[in-house]
Amino acid sequence: MSSSIVAPEVISLGCRLNLAESETIRALLGSSDVVVVNSCAVTNEAVRQTRQAIRRARRARPSAQLVVTGCAAQIDPASFGAMPEVDRVIGNAEKLVPASWVSDDAALVQDIMAVRQTAPHLAASFSAHVRAFVEVQNGCDHRCTFCAIPFGRGNSRSVPAGAVIDRVQALVEAGHREIVLTGVDLTSYGPDLPGAPTLGQLVERVLAHTGVERLRLSSLDGIEIDDRLFALLTQERRVLPHVHLSLQAGDDMVLKRMKRRHSRAQSVALVARLKTARPDIAIGADLIAGFPTEDETMAANTLALIDDCDIVHAHIFPYSPREGTPAARMPQVAPGVAKARAAALRARAAARRANWLRGLVGTTQLVLVERPGDRGHAENFAEVRIVLPPLALSLSKGRSSSLAAEKQDGASTSSARTEIGKIVAVNIVDIQDGKLIGVPA
Image (tube, rainbow, N blue to C red; front, side, top):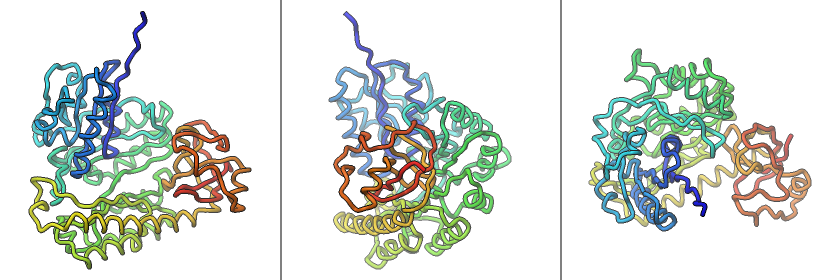
């Protein structure tokens, strides 16, 4: 009787850095019957979702070994280890070490603050993704009052440029045409390395010594964008016109109480400089609604920031207190008020994004084709659906389309199938459900 082979599974929650590390974990697992939940702890909701994912994974794979790792597990290993569904808990530093995945220890979690290096690691290829994520930095030396991530990731540490270049080139040779440099606090890259290189210097070296076609950067702290990095973001063709800023709020008093290092005026001025130097650049931002002590005027300032900074890729979170953080001891905004303010931010961001997308109709965008072959993202990270010309004509004439009824995960008979991983020029003809619709140029 033949036995079926059960492949390992890695469930990645939260940030792009987790996604990159999940690929490394997947490569380390081999063919073992194991499910790994790579957890997030950025908010209480993220921790709740981690517990939900664990329970779902156990129901789906009752006989597999279930391992929890990531920030939530690092911060509170005892709590996750006590869950009946969990077999093992592995810390953030240990999860990237091969020996951890052949150990029998129920818990492998060291003091993350004692970790001083980011070891060279990354899977040689990202089989499920057309873009690859390269971790160049981990940890954070800042102590924003709302954030528990330093306790999950430790202090800031950087990967030497030579190791980054080797990884990027290996991924390029494996067929990846877009690379994302990622980290917990990406713009703090370098002070711990010999010569104290900057993120701008790292980007210059990656461009000079690899064949990467499209280079994207994950979240940046605007106050740390120096002249060298600014020039790369606005003048280098291979650095994509998409900047995601860690803004968090648009009111100076809230920013001060968050212990952020920038003012509202500095954020607005930075975006104005970026847009002047590269008008097609798309701005993304993280924003928190309902931070402790936030009143209606403060909330209105953050709401106005969406228009003032032309934010078209918004990540919005209602504040939730994290135990042990200074913000958790401040006077709290009622949860219902925080949720309502988050909803208002999302509505304003959706309106801003819709206006931006309308402005892209009639343009030609270079799209990196993703699964299943009829969609992808433009350089500015707008999502694009590629269709056949007859359907595009019907859309342009205002007739109803079957696209709205199609499942998100399947290509339609009207879709223009293209080789996954290819970069194609697409003429944008319409917008539907927040996505650009286009035909091959």
